Amino acid sequence: MISHLKGILEHVAKDHIVVDVGNVGYYVKVSAGTLAKLPKPGEKVHVYTYQVVREDDISLYGFITKEEKNLFALLLSVSGIGPKASLALLSSFPIDKLATAITNGNVGLISTVPGIGKKTAQKLVIELKEKVAKAYALKAADTGMGIPDTEESPQVADAISALVSLGYSSKEARSAIAQTDVASNDVEVIIKQALKSLV
Image 1: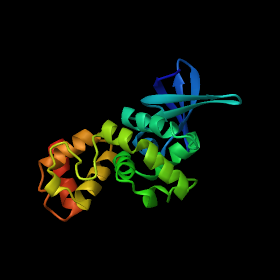
Image 2: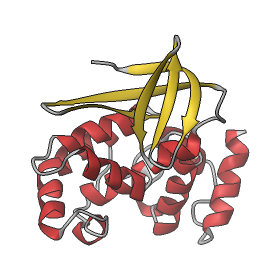
Image 3: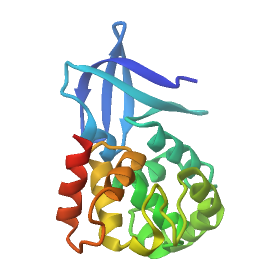
């Protein structure tokens, strides 16, 4: 099992990259989230990988963070959800938003992903709700990391998702937002204040 790759980012396409490690090019399928955080071709890159072995195929899936790799593995554990569907889910939402949707049982949101029907979304929620809540410390009424339950709001959730999409971990995002005026109803204000503490 290849767990990670460190090398030169040789090529970037819309759904995969090629990483040169010791003059060997590894073809790695990636999510939209990982694509957005990659360095420029020709620069050094470190991706966490998940190897899927089948009778007729051996594929590598790459992620810029361990969180995304771990969530990919959890999604794959659900029967009926393969690598393609798992990658589609990770490409459709920031990790925090997807984890929250699973934890809160938001079948409607999950089933908006191409290839994920309502029944599959329901199965995913039933099988992963507790695992994801435990892995990401997420509950319907508690997103933790110093943000009081009474101050949790859609604006705060959106701000966390935005910061995660910018490359910060969910822990860093929550910690930064906990130091801001979370009572604000303006997502941009929350994000700007959080970014100041992250600099």
